[in-house]
Image 1 (tube, rainbow, N blue to C red):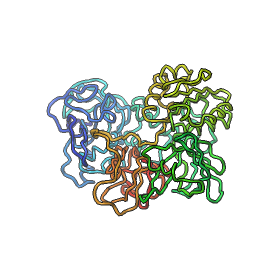
Image 2 (cartoon, helix red, strand yellow; image 1 turned 30 degrees about the vertical axis):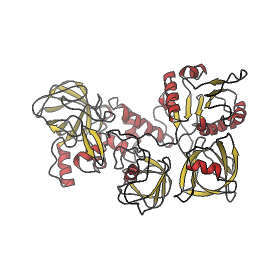
Image 3 (spheres, helix red, strand yellow; image 1 turned 90 degrees about the vertical axis):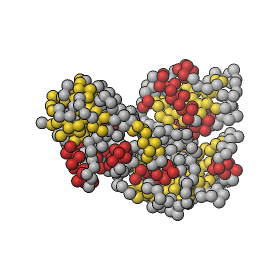
Image 4 (cartoon, one colour; image 1 turned 30 degrees about the horizontal axis):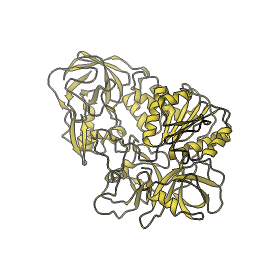
Length: 586
């Protein structure tokens, strides 16, 4: 018979950690006497980061005495007091490899249902002073688990724990955790996970994505599966940078020029997917080489890539390209990459852009025109005025090749001619987009300034498009994901403080920062944070893959081996260091 040994609570508080302030509820301590357990948590308890912890699905966290004993021996610790793993219930029994998702238990007056393993999070390591603890919990199959409150009631230490119902499929907590975080996934267990109603929605979505990724390699039998003989797409390209020649430069508007690039030896270029970008490395002045990324602005021919660059008044690289770069010059180019690409399918297509954001969706339009795609297609673009409206004739010619195309243009500073009903003065609004007839089952591709994409994305969602139907691209740094860290005023990325490093150069391409590596930093993530480059992470130990980043060029080594290696050409910055000069898509 399992027993509740301790009820632990703690309200969120601000904790100083690595120069930051973390708002966390990880500090729990035992309480005496009975405590009421309600839908959201135990009385007197709270969570600091409700995106990953707490709520009805994760109301109560459970950890076992047997795991305490295991970690005491493994870590050589004798100071592990109940609640230190952030759990609300410390129990004797209920091992992770026996308790199943969907199991129901009665404890005291309350009844509970198991919903998911513990969320892999850096804060348990912060609480224990063991930075790799999040990784250890998964690798050693001892994560603990969350409960949903079925019936509220009082509980207290000493209460017996009674199983009232077994979950369907009998998939254990340990197996569920491994299914998400570890390699060599068992397709049969994935099928089981998808058939458990009690499993939390977030984990269900993750398993649906994993199942979809496995489908082309699996035999028929998955829910909703269609048999397919299509082979996985191989990404085009070459490692690192290669030298290419500027074939010609064509002005498109007073501020935008297209640069045509060819190989130096006449060899064919790999085909890029419409929407992908190139990274270009240029030596501008005496500073370290600068790296910038620009979308391919048309479907590549056998021997030529085209990028189109807007001259920004304070842009070091764009100014160099417009004023100094000439046909015949040699430049370093990294192979096409990026996930903002035109997907195959049968749904209507909406291509929306503003300003220089036209470039990736223009490449998509080239692809659609080349195949005479029969689907309804909307081309919606915003420009300052007619003079600054790039690719006008080119897009008209492409749209004319499509049997069901719709064009809508907005000028923010010029009135349209009376004979141009497809042009409007102003910016797109929810009402004007609805008036274009965009169907709610369309796939929309957006590129432009962040405010434009935020507004248009909101209009489309209000119109009825689901989030997964709305695809966006931006070349500025991605929004940070730093769970629990108290926000501070944004700081422009800069050189790291302290003595200049003596290691290989590290370039954060999106942020425009290049600096020599210093071993004073534990990882590339730590180095990026020192430069105030926006970062995305959760576990910080190579488990959750939130920090996955494209490695444009160079080589790294892992200081803590990830539990599952990321895809080729990507790395986990939370546990890696450079071994050569590297360029990161950050």
